[in-house]
Image (cartoon, rainbow, N blue to C red; front, side, top):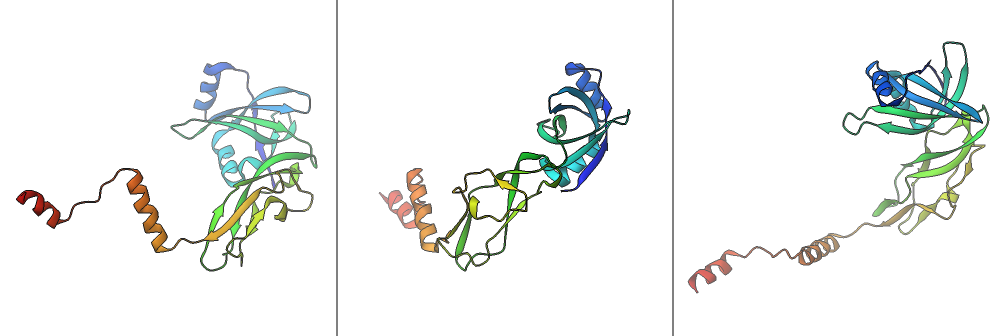
Length: 214
């Protein structure tokens, strides 16, 4: 994944009041930490940072540039979001060194089609990986082409980019192909679910008439 340069400024106001004022100014309160350095409280341009994050996800590598010319490489480690506005309220940024390996969670993307009559079960959405900070994969593709019913792919069978190490248990199932249920099976399962829920079948017009006559 490419490196993104973004300007930031030091933050001198702390606490809830200071954070609110920072957000009202269109900026995101953030903390830079790691490598034994004293945490730095900074403010990031809100719209710009959010746009980069949408494109690159949590594994986006940022070069944070301060007004005094200081440049720091960092990756997002934690976000706080407003549950109603879905805006970013705060971000923790982990300082990294170029070429240093970091632990990241990378989304698994399924591509291709399994064999006919196969139903895909996506068992694992992300893989835990150790990867160079300046070459973090945006996603990992897993091909389903020709995968037969009953087959599965484990984490250890997934192809990874050069220099990337798998941290997830290699025996963990990532995707499984099962037989698609027949119409009869679907109807039987629906009938069973209705019975367990105590849902009575509607009476026919003949049954209603018999009750009235009685």
